[in-house]
Image 1 (cartoon, rainbow, N blue to C red):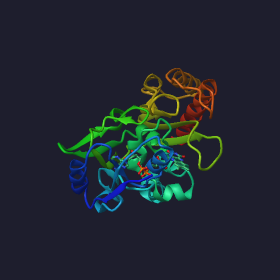
Image 2: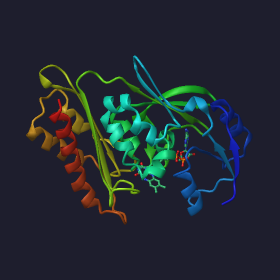
Image 3: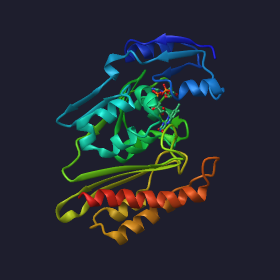
Length: 285
Ligand SMILES: Cc1cc2nc3c(=O)[nH]c(=O)nc-3n(C[C@H](O)[C@H](O)[C@H](O)COP(=O)(O)OP(=O)(O)OC[C@H]3O[C@@H](n4cnc5c(N)ncnc54)[C@H](O)[C@@H]3O)c2cc1C
């Protein structure tokens, strides 16, 4: 595994380095996905552009409108941020089940998104939270709705050379509740067999005004169960509706069998997770 490592001092510097290299280079942040892919020969790169020293892409900022997470925020940064955890428990719940402590100390939110695994835990939580992805490329900066970021496994709508600078989350409206649930083959160091993130916002009389149901590892990308969301929106949620929404979410998945679980098992589990996730949100509304 031979490569040249280029240390970028700013996002613009990273773009300059990228423009000066021949094809075959990659950005690296924590390296927890990429280094394994290089070692296994799944990817080959002669040049890696190391983003980890870019100060402007670190940390979590909060203002009156919400939160801005630098792309280099680690899962541990997210897990330990009290304001973010209080606003969006689903995000904290996702961050704290990524790998083990060592992985959470170095793995970043930008890497979790850009790697575009259908099973990426934090990406699934951010999908339920309607995150906006701040990207920078040779044509300038733009914000991408997270639902428009994922294409398929390992494929995003980022342009060649475009990097993720930050992730933005709006302050939740008053009665917003979120939950993240994951089933893996063991508790630590294990990617999800199935995951589900739910975010529900309630208005007067406990009517659900906005519903988001994001699912992991049951399709070619982190996906939203949009028909199930529509069942919940505008309704007062009771046990019967929860069961119908969960069955609908199951119908919207296209899980595959792999050595970790069969498609039939994933289908069954996703229904159970959605049911539990909605119930958790409704229980605290
Ligand atoms: C033992 C182990 C257990 C794991 N368990 C889990 C788990 O439970 N849940 C889970 O979701 N993941 C898990 N992972 C995967 C991984 O830790 C996470 O996806 C992590 O967030 C990746 O971040 P990183 O900074 O290490 O990415 P890197 O490996 O540095 O990069 C990953 C990809 O993203 C690109 N990239 C990185 N940063 C940027 C950026 N800012 N802009 C554009 N492109 C960028 C890189 O070019 C590369 O293609 C596990 C990994 C290991 C090794």
